[in-house]
Amino acid sequence: MPQPNMRTFLLRRLHSLSGVFPLGVFLVEHLYINSFALKGAERFNAQVAFMHGLPYLAVLEVLVIALPLMFHTFYGLWIVYTGQVNVLRYPYFRNWTYLIQRLSGLITVVFVGVHLWQLRLQALFYGAHVDFEMMATVLAQPGMLAFYLVGVLASLWHFANGLWAFFLDWGIAIGPRSQRHVSWACNIMFVVLSVVAVRALLAFLP
Image (cartoon, rainbow, N blue to C red; front, side, top):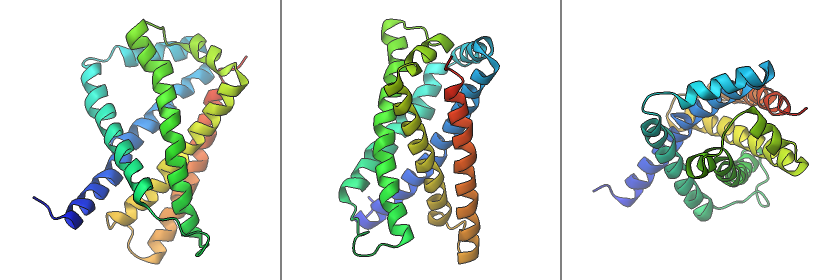
């Protein structure tokens, strides 16, 4: 059985990995599907129908999404609970990103929970039909639109900054120069994905 320090090391590496593979990949794929809203209701509904018609969808959702998401969420909450924030004593840039990463993670947990309930669990338990019209109805409420905008941007920040940490934790970006390059790449990715996500959300509005 691994010693406590080794167990923590392995859990943190697995937590970092799960945030990129498969959750980060699924996030990007999800944004791609949502972007079909820019092509109109018919194209978006066709993509949703295609995804819902995949073979072994339930198995994929459990193994590739639900289990990694549960692990990443609950261990992430443990990291937040046991972590120490010291931005007041040491207001360095990376200390602020450490704090923002934790805050964005908490926002993401709430957002994903509501999003899953609205667009997956209601369909599963009550037979709600997920389509362009359903999303348009949800986002027509100003409060829900604001909630989705904040939740999506927090999720993307959490992913982009977590990806930077992944490259460091796994020894891919070792030196200061490579770490700066990865930081710039992740920041650019955050901006690009944010534009994609916001345009997709606004495409549901009349």
